[in-house]
Length: 333
Image 1 (cartoon, one colour):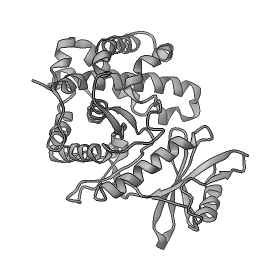
Image 2 (spheres, helix red, strand yellow):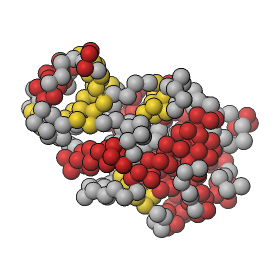
Image 3 (cartoon, rainbow, N blue to C red):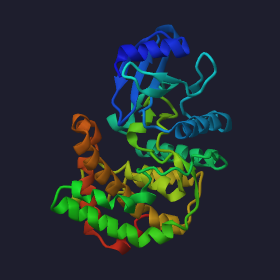
């Protein structure tokens, strides 16, 4: 969808007049809507394949968090002029698509800047508070299957053919084998609705703010999953973009700061702490499998799809180079 059509939809549904600028996204059409004196908003026009039950789950979760923890830095969602949370439009291309308008959270995505150890601890604190705030939330669609939920990693083995042959495929296969070994223990772990995508592009920061983390965005992968999975995703996304094996202790040097902040507000069992490094490794494998597959299907969007994949190969190589016992002990020693 073009920006001009998005502007017309926003004005018709929400009475907001502004200029739309496209955000890069995986599958939705998402725009920054600058309405001058009215402020800035994010307009999301869902992919035609999105199920309205799952979109309702996301809106309901955000509304729950707004009531349960109004101090958490998450976007607010708006109804249209008739009060509908999920209005449907027929686009110029003839598709029926669901529209949402949410607040724009100003700041810099963390993947475009750096942070200190105390700031990473703050990230962990917010993740823990989100967990507590979601603990009593349920929705008929919260048990949906999300490909990015690492609990489903073994369902992605058919995508191995999209991984380049050689070392990269070997590292991914070994990650799958190790994940299969711990999967029975993962199936016994505590579960609840969780964000499930605490990556650095979904964290908005402001270095001059005492809070540092000023926005947690994109609840598109929220799902009922293991608490350990949510933490492992956050830790994996703090791994360095470049990694030289001889220059650091391990991949979790920065991630431990996030874990330290998290544990101030939420507990983890010893079993969860032993599983989290395997789940971080599994998330790397999920990313490799899904992005290599999707980049081949959608070559016109491959730059965006593969933006984090290259760094992950060195991470998978590192996991490949150490023993299973060493992985298990990474966060408990």
